[in-house]
Image (cartoon, rainbow, N blue to C red; front, side):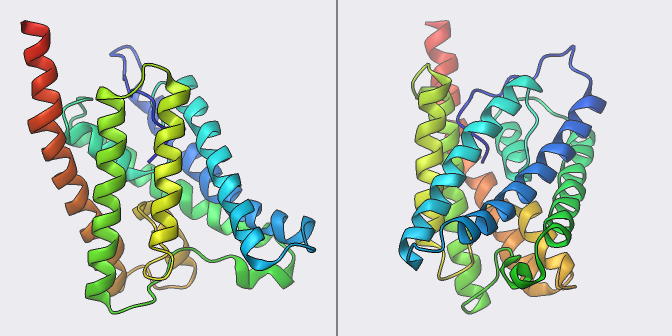
Length: 247
């Protein structure tokens, strides 16, 4: 999920602008992540594999801070459908189904263009590196792992947004470190994605986006996990916050 800032969508914000901003943000997220991997391999050839992986994760943390800033500038744009769904399901933002039906496809389209641009912009020798999350285990195990990791990252992001530090920078630090740590835990299972748009974009390039395995692991599992995490937060933290205000 993007950053750890409190997502507040003002009524004056044009939803049309937000949809376009979502698409652009998703494009940049996928493109910059892919190019960062290439940049590390090109610029730090003297490092071993573990050091390169550590550096790549550092780039991801930096990008999460960058996209937190972009979200603030655009008043809520994000690259991840899970973020939009989570904050809406938890009752933190109030998007109608029609708005969600525009924002999520826009993020998918932006991610697809980002993956395509990354592949076409990279030297041919690095094209094999231009891959996204892919399943390394049985699909049921993969779905369980992707679901658990998504539940964790959503719960942490929502809880931090509601009960975490007031500083947006500190909230972003908490969610960024947790997200990167969870991605390391799931690396040998599903990638992991914790972002259906990102997973779809790379699967689309390989014509694997319409397989049951992809839909099950990278869409159904994380969406159900997101709704579950949002429900837990809504019934515990959101309602308790409302009661505190009334008291």
